[in-house]
Amino acid sequence: MGRIVAIGECMGELSETGEPGLLSMGFAGDTLNTAWYLRRRLGTDWQIDYLTAVGTDTLSGRLLDFLAGEEIGTAHVQRLSDKTIGLYHISLKDGERSFTYWRNDSAARRLARDPALVDKALQGADIAYWSGITLAILPPEDRASMIEVLSQFARRGGQVMFDPNLRPRLWDSADTMRSWIHRAAAVSDLCFPSFDDEASHFGDASPAATAERYRQHGAARVVVKNGPGDITLVHAAGDLETVAVPAAASIVDTTAAGDSFNAGYLAAELSGETMRSAVQAGAALAGRVIGARGALVPQAVQVDDK
Ligand code: ADP
Image (tube, rainbow, N blue to C red; front, side, top):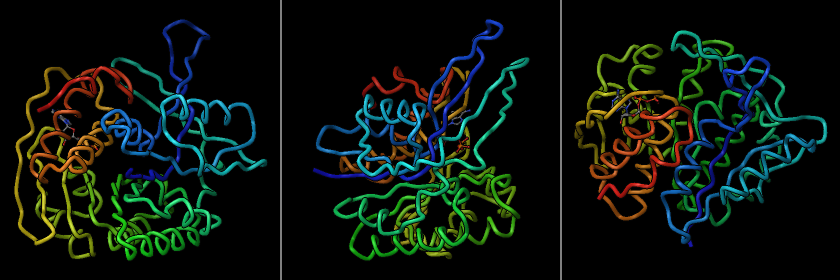
């Protein structure tokens, strides 16, 4: 049996229902979205665990029930009695979404407080999956210990997969963000940057330049997403390929495009596909996810891409 550990923050999501005074409640977060798609894509010979920290309150308990109901393992979720989960609210006005967050003091920010617990969760795992959002929410000293634990995991033969998911608002400065993102790349087998974000914050002239920069900072392999544009991938040996993205049948909501892409990619690679066909599988899944509202789209998964 293989095991993947996704590491990060899952928040409560409050969205407007259209009925005044009535909100609906769900759970979402970048690494959780990827874990959810991985769970639905991979067979029972893969265990998917989620590593985070939550409170001991009822709402935190609901999140754990949700994960368990989705068959995502919660054995490594820490419970902190003085904290609770973060929340966000989405409102839709004239087709534009806007977000309000309450996450500055969330339990998840403490997920790497005790590096021994992270190390324990990774013992015997095959893959650790995390993101620049996971990195951003940690206190600086915990970022360093998280990267150290992941580097030990990589030295034992584990694969670290990292989506930079650049979110400048979560960082105290753009320079801090850039430097930590590169430290995380250094322990990664595979990085999944998105070109528009990378061009904005690192000034890359092309997806190939993004891929090259991550390689220079130590990532063994890179897959650069680019919205509807070609995907650029770089193999461990350094050779570069581009893969066209099929036109989406309809674009309703691009939430979780990148997260679902990463899951479709990884599931295909773990099933023995080449990087090129794993990219095609990721793009096919993401193309369906953007055709419906919300981050978690069950009907997008129930299609065989082969
Ligand atoms: P992120 O959500 O991380 O910003 P992207 O916007 O680059 O990432 O999208 C991730 C993937 O989703 C793309 O590589 C592509 O496969 C798919 N995708 C996104 N936007 C479109 C689109 N307009 N048409 C078709 N596929 C898309």
